[in-house]
Length: 419
Image 1 (cartoon, rainbow, N blue to C red):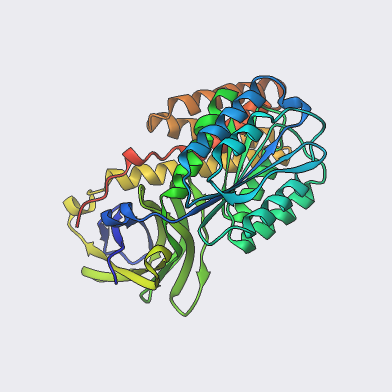
Image 2: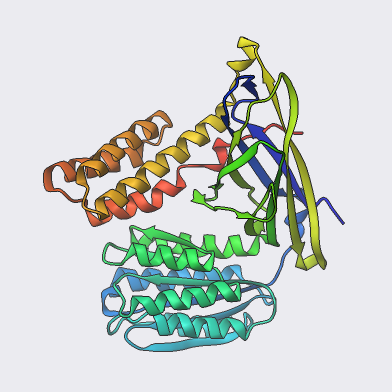
């Protein structure tokens, strides 16, 4: 049965000039589960791996307990749960089990207390073991920490394990004393997400949001294949929602590439920005490629379903047509450009090039202000001042730029034309 997922596309410029030189074209591609998929619900298997080290004392540990309670309230008896807590030791607080005996589970959660140092890798390993004991379903490992861990390389190896097992890690850091690069890399290796929690009061919303998104996951194993005609070359594939991310692509033939998208949620589209290099063409309208999405819907016992969409482009000499742009797509192009500048600025800073980092952040600020991203631009301006005065950025500023910079695309910004 086809029709579980729709594809739509829009070009930044629907008309290109019929010149004698190659040109760049940007395509915004949306993958969206159909409306009827909102009713589909798969069992959710979640394991919380929680830092209860001494630095979590006070409001942090209290908010953590509240967050776990609120997240459990979202689960029902078809879902399964485990809780692992760690300091310098690891303890399986709640072994893998269906969410049935809530009173017992909540009583154990309320007993979580702070103690000890921070050793994360064994706790992640235990969490993965508990998840493997659960029945088939959507799997998540939610990791929260507020400190530097011992043996960071072991954490990366466990993240590799999670990726092989199909367990995305939601890696959350609270406060300013944790290694954001480690959590980002753990999330990337497991195909999960990492984020920065500035205030303990935000933990509850993060946990609830993660569980709700898992419950909305209806499509699995989705893969985008781009089949391009002669003279059309892919240059980059960026995810722009829910977070900006350079997905890359894998060549699979003479003029075809594939991009693994994995899971899709019923409540929000996955939107990609595809950058193509187009060789010259005579006047006329051409099919420059086809997008094909293959996917599974385990809840409906569907495997290898496909959705396809042709991508068309017109070459013209009409000045009026050449002036036409899609403001939505152009805005996304600018947002991705700002993100690339932020990323390169942080790379320059890590390499000791303070001047290069400063200039790139200044360029990113200009783009962000043009897009109305005032708060992030203000943070960057403060960090530019820190660089110019002290030669370094604050820990909080670096974390804000690394995480908020990926969130500059809002769902409300993107409205592709209906077919």
